[in-house]
Every structure is written in structure tokens, then in C-alpha cells.
Image (spheres, helix red, strand yellow):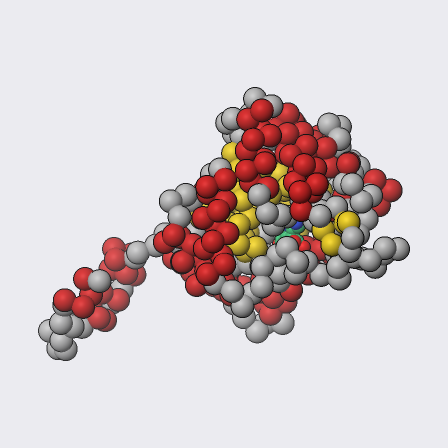
Length: 339
Ligand code: PBG
């Protein structure tokens, strides 16, 4: 690195010269944030005029489609250009095949259509994984006591094609099955959707930071009549691993991913930087539900300054190498950035 060639000799070099006032600091700032850096994760539920706050995620709601559309218009006006959408489906629609996931008239498909009709320029990225549709709360089909990889991939292809038919711009597989990006790319192309992109959750760790999200969708792994894994460790990554994240990201790019993701965010910024240096596609970072909840809880107690911590975390994620940040703070941070 260039750094080594220079002699940073005091008093000729004084680092503080560049920090004297905000104008100077702004001249030499290496990273900036703007609302178009964010994607907003949204939870959708059946009904009309429904808006229910998620107890472990203050300020985040499950909304019916009509209110989701209103919120999307507001987000767009703030400069946000992408939403990740997740649905909470009725328990009666859940089974072990996940077949409701590709119902052309399902909640997700109706939501995609409604958003794209009301706000065509908003990039809509539906989540592709079976957990909201699985009676066992797993991201795939259970066979012989575990999630069966290849049959799950075929279900995901049907799901992704139904999202594309509904008008999705991108699909976002969050399931961590092997080879699913390749199968999704092939399946989308075969159905004529070569312009529908894939944002792959490539390095998704088995993390306790997803707790509040599972509350939002009622999608936590459940006890069952058959043998099922009690957690997601047979498909999501071990958080002790680093090299494996690079391998997963490189494989996904080879399989056709247009963007890769590292998830969670703050505790995984070393991984974000390494993946960023290894791939030649945009890296997205999911600043997940538990990270959101921690800041909200500490701020509620007056222990941390909410807005400052929020902006610091988002900036640090960007500095680590994120091109895009999926964050529940997208709206609040955009309001501050637009001031
Ligand atoms: C499920 C999915 C999860 C999240 C996004 N998609 C939870 C999980 O894997 O159990 C987590 C998002 C968050 O915590 O904000 N495929």
C-alpha cells in the first residue's frame, strides 16, 4: 500500500489539521450516505387498513397491501428506490411443500402487483424462501429430518417465477440452499424473465439477530409431528467462518447472482470488506431486525443517542464496502439525510 512509502513525521504532519471544522471534514470525507443507498424491508399482511406494530421492532409495522402502497409512495418521495418484501400468511395456508409460495393470487404476488402499479419506479425485491409458508418454520421442504436441498430449489424456482410474473424487478433468495442461484437464473430465463435480477443472500449466517424478524412473520422453527432441525444451522453459515463467506459469494456470482449479500451487518463488517474485495458485483448488507431492536431498546432507556447511533452504524456499513444497505432505519435515516 501507498501508505508505507510516506513518512508521517510530526510536526510536519498533523492529522488534526484536516479535522479543524466541519467544512474541512466534509472536504476529506471518504464515504457518504444517501437515501438511494437503502432498501426498506416491509412486512405485509392480509386485510384492509391494517397496521400492526411488531412488539420487538418499535416503529416497524405489518401492513395490509393498501397501506403498504401508501408507505411505498412516501419512501419513494424520500429518495428510497428499493423495498424488500416479506409476507405473513395465515397458518392454514402453511404446509411442508410451501405451495402457497407460488400461488399466482397469493399475498406476495398481489402485493408486488399493487406496489408496481402504484409506484412503478420502486424496485421491488420479494424474498424467496419457504419459511413464511412452512408449517415447520424452515426455509425449505423437510425430508428425513432436515431441509432437502434439491427439491427445495425446485419450489424456489416456481416461487421466483410467480414473483416475476407479478412484476418483481429482482428476486432475493434468502434460503441458503446450494445451487439455488443457478436454478433460479435458469428458471427465470426459461420463463422469459432474463431481465429479472437476483440479489442473493450469499453469506447468510445462522444468527440470533433474526429473532424480531421471526416474531414479525411468525416464522421461527417450530416443534413438529416429525423430526425437524431445531435451528437453521444445517443451511445458514457458522458465524465462526470467514473463508466460507468468500466461497459462497464467488459461487453465487458464477451461478448468475447480480448482487450478493452479507447478513447480518454490524458484527460482520470484516466479512463485508472481504467479500467486497473478492467479487465484482455490488455487495449488499442486511442490517437485520435484532440490530434494529438493540438500538431502539437502548435509545428508549436513554442509554444511547438514537439518531447518532443509527447514522454511525449505517455509515460504517457503507464504509466497510456495502453498495446497498437493507435496513429498517431506511425511512428515518433518509428523513435526516434530506434535511
Ligand atoms: C428468512 C429470512 C430471515 C430474515 C430474512 N429472511 C430470517 C431467518 O433466516 O430466519 C431475517 C431478517 C431480519 O432479521 O431482519 N428466510
